[in-house]
Length: 443
Image 1: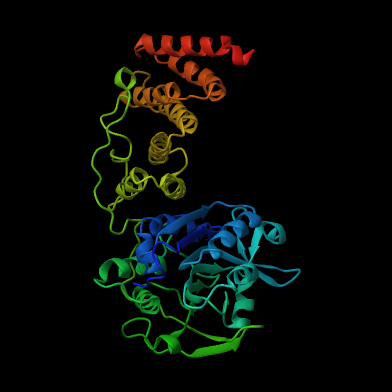
Image 2 (image 1 turned 90 degrees about the vertical axis):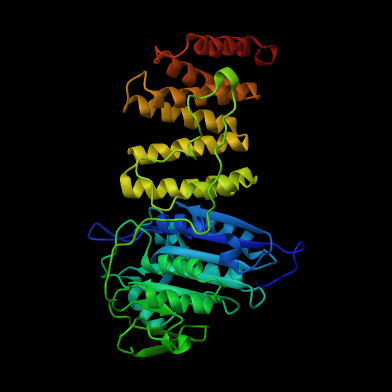
């Protein structure tokens, strides 16, 4: 692995999920699923570096300026940088410029609600050569595809290595699961005893992935020096020069033999985590372990929760929370926002907030989870009481009187709907809320 001066320089992994690409109500690329899958790959493997590293997950953003600020922060990192982008490419038809569609972007709002592609190059331009990688898993819509064919490339920055695939608009994708190219990239990282170079990873991923006819591969076959699939006919390579950039190769990939379904995200190198005892004494939630140790209703074969737990216990709370949000978004797309699977991830986020000391957020999430469970279970169900006890415990840990006053009424209304709950818990909450209202600082 590269060494860019341990202790002096930091690396950065920036994972950006744009808008989902849909054709005839079928999902072509599910950016949230791709982010969730990449998020559990160790940053050292993604960067091919052992330097200390920050990871940023950006999923569901609607403001291009928010993405720009994250990109600018990442580009200022002195060490190695990986920028991953997945989603839908579109065009501002007025200016004929390529954009990465963000959540909710429509043809009429591209100029205001999508990320201009040239911003990526502008932010990366000043970085030194050899330490920046841009990884793409995109679908072009009908407006963007002719422009891409004209350019023959999707330039990012002269100083960056750019790898990835851009699927054509007419392709019917695999659904709301991890796309084949991203899955293959991860699988190759996991399968290789020694970490391949990015170019080797890209070549292996292209060869193993199930890619649609006409896909644009960056860099293409001539630079890779490989065929894209066993037995595939060597495709024609066209190279055109995009304005202000050198030529890049693209090639057409035939359908791969033996196409199969792609499973949802799974972790790479995640180690099993020991059970986490919950705090609380008499207020301990009614669970033997936290939601990070409880199997969700439809857990993936490979489970991201040990990796998320490891991040949280290592003090990397923001990374753990962002990765959990990415998985929650993935579950929303695959099972629905009202599903038991989605509810399980709300509880995981609540427990992560507790571990991070953000008790206000933990109370809000646990209270919301308990109310949702009341719609699924009887009022005396263990699952309902566990969520309510979690909310109550975290509320007792709130040191900020204002936050306790804001969240206390909702909690008390919840506890009143649980007749089988120990009445002392409701009395405790009521007495504390009354005391906070009488406190001199509130007069």
